[in-house]
Length: 150
Image (cartoon, rainbow, N blue to C red):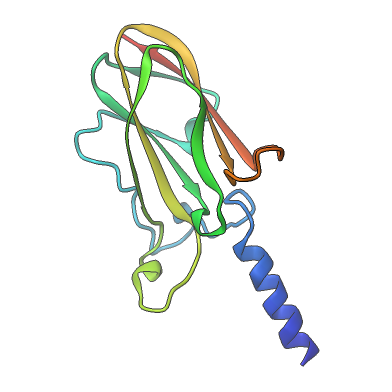
């Protein structure tokens, strides 16, 4: 009895952990589902590009594709953007095929934020993963990328 209660408690805690702590990310399974980024997006920026410089064209949509745990309240949102960059949409979806099965609950999900550079420039986009209602808490994770628009 005690073991089943302990196991249930550990599973509940894992379900509430931010994506960084949950290692069932899309890239680590054979049943991975690609990010649901629209086909008109010219540049796809992934978690592996954290801290890098990425070139984008003016007036073309580009996307930041990150894995989060929105079912536990942790969502990615821009905390800082250069003045020449505007948000241009969002998309989200499963990271594994199993998440499409009846009865599947929780887990990591793709969170794709689209942007467009309205003019040439260089600046940093900072994405923070947090629970929006926990305004006094530090973010669970931070993603930074420098965008160079030409």
